Length: 306
Image (tube, rainbow, N blue to C red; front, side, top):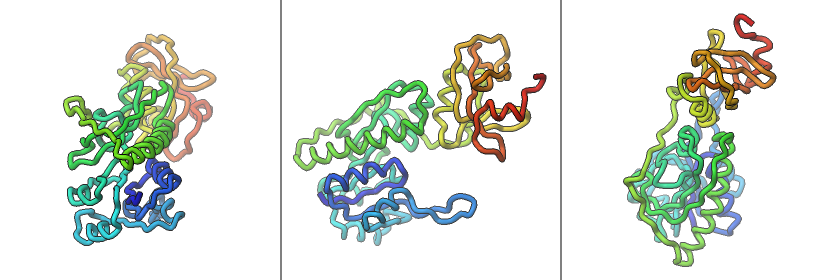
C-alpha cells in the first residue's frame, strides 16, 4: 500500500519501521521542523526524520498543513492511506479527505479515555492499572474518530512512564500492522467512540512537579512515575529544589508530619506522607548535579540533626 507517514518522536519510530518491514511503499514522511536542542541550541532532527533519512524516504517538515503549497505537495504524493503516530499537529479537513482509504492514528490510550497530548503520563499519574493503544480514524475533533482496533496491557505498579512508553510504542506498531491488513482486505470494523466516557490528557507542565506531601504515598509514587522523563517531580530538601526520579512505597507507619524527612536506610531517604506511611526516595538530582542514588547524595548532604 502507498502510505504517507506522519510522526515525530520516539513513540512513532516502531510504527514507521513496522510499515517498512511489512513492505508498504512509504511515499513520504511528514515530521515536525528541526528544533534547537541542548546547550549549543543546535538544530536537531526528530527520531522519525532520522529513520526516514536512513531509508532515503522524502521528508517534509511544514510549519502549517493548511498552506496551499503544502496541500498541493501532499496531494502529489498520491497516498492511498495516511498514517499518523504522535505527529504533534492536527490534520485539517483537506488532509483528512485526501487519501481514498482515509487517515488513521496510533493513539497510546484506550479511547475514549485520555484523548490529548500526554495519555501515557496521565494514565500513570492517575494510578490506572490498565492502558493500551487504539488505532482510530482521524476526525477533525481531537482523538474522537471511529475506533478500528484496540489492544490492552496492564500497568505494573512500579512501572514508570519511560518503560510503559516503549511497550506501548511496540504494541501500537503491531496493532497498526494488523489493522492496515484489515483495511486492505475490506474487513476493518469501525466502532464509534462514546463521547460521554471521554477524558482529557493535557500537555504536562512544571506546575505538576512539586510534591504535596499531604497526599497518600501511592499518589505521590504515581506522580514520581508519571512525570518522567519531564518535567519530573520535585521536593524541597536542605533549602534546595530536588528532582525525584524514583521512589518506593514502604508501608511503614510514622507519626511524623507529612513532608518530614524521617531518616534514611540502606536504600534511600524516608519521607512522611499524608496517609501516615513512609515513602522511600531512592533516586534524585540536586541542582547542578547528576542524577544519582539518594544514599550517595545523603553521604555528602546528611539530614539536619543526624
